[in-house]
Amino acid sequence: MRQNIVAGNWKMNKTVQEGVELAKDINSRVEAIDPKCQIILGTPFVHITEVVKTVKSDKIAVAAQNCADKVSGAYTGEVSAAMVKSTGAKYVILGHSERRAYYGENNAILKEKTDLALANDLLPIFCVGEVLSERESNKHFDVVKSQIEEALFHLSAEAFGKIVLAYEPVWAIGTGKTASPAQAQEIHAFIRGLVAGKYGKEVANNVSILYGGSCNAKNAKELFSNPDVDGGLIGGASLKAEDFLSIITAF
Ligand code: 13P
Image (cartoon, rainbow, N blue to C red; front, side, top):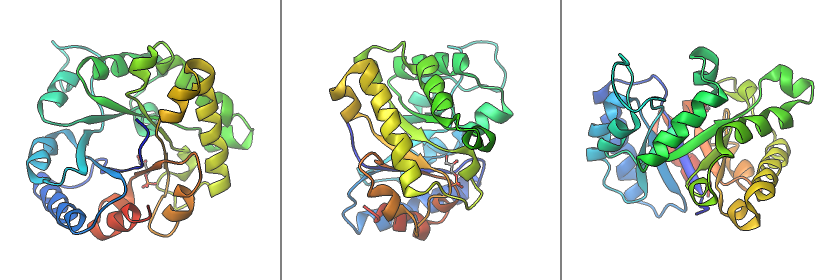
């Protein structure tokens, strides 16, 4: 179901204790308002159980930032989708550009991860986006198209309906450079059109497409006011309750 979403991606930041403090702070601020969006906290694996216990607001869900592409067994250091599910997390971020760039995750691996996440009743927040050279050579539409087609378009319409998409131009992540509202709208509309071409208009109208990349309190309102931008996936600005809340209240 299409909904407005503000999701924080904490990346590799905060100890468990610091994470619990942040979650507590966000929870009490959220309970004091009436947020017009679903809020998601994407925490490191080791934080999830504690953060799930900490958040009381039914507007806040918890996400893992990754899961394994294998079911179980001798894969030292990996965390399976079933394990993530057993923590109480509801969502899992998949295909983040940092996973693609630093850990060799390609579309084939992400297809496996998506299938395992869905088989374990986790809702994937599936990230796509181009690097600067691809944007500059006008290849961003093709890049995003193949990322989505190769990892997701084997899904049935029903399974695809559980996916949240996040467009994160790599050149905007952590750089302070944001896609302009017009650039975001252009590619979000392209993505929705791609989904419509494969699954039909109803499925396309129901998918939430988030923008990520230096989204902050100052630019969130303008970005979120675009018809095809359904919220944000927030890195740096999700690490302080006050900043994160000002993005939540941009809706
Ligand atoms: P920043 O908001 O820090 O640019 O990070 C965006 C991001 O990668 C969220 O997944």
